[in-house]
Image (cartoon, rainbow, N blue to C red; front, side, top):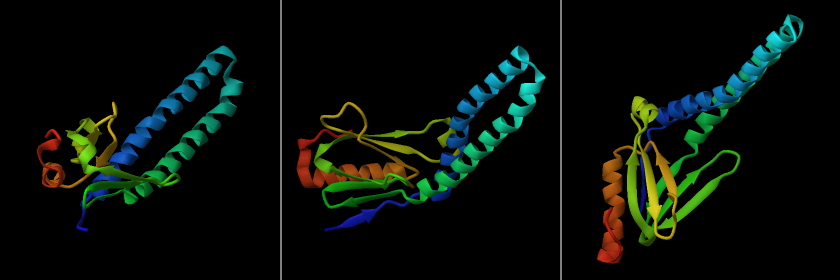
Length: 166
């Protein structure tokens, strides 16, 4: 059985995951900060003096967790083509190992949002028959157009024209 592992730009994926993690952590931090300001104006300065270090500590803990977790997530990504199956491994606390038969793949979309564009990475969204959502998203694959064509060519060589090309 032939196995082709896809090369991933791990450094760019790490930076992307850290950036999006920090941005996502700013939302709860903003809510906490809003309530801190509300208490400041509603109750007075005495309570806000005690809450300010607590709010700062919470944000520092969230940021430290994100800075620890995101590089581990990027390091645990592994994508490969094994015969007639696309395999995608990911996760830190909950490890996910997906096996997607090439026969079920109907489309592969290449997506690049503004943060992904800044870091020069693409997300490959794998669409399968019988699923309304994408089956898997592959982040940071180098040369995504070539990988997309490789997967579709492998599917076509195994199953012929049976499946629609994306």
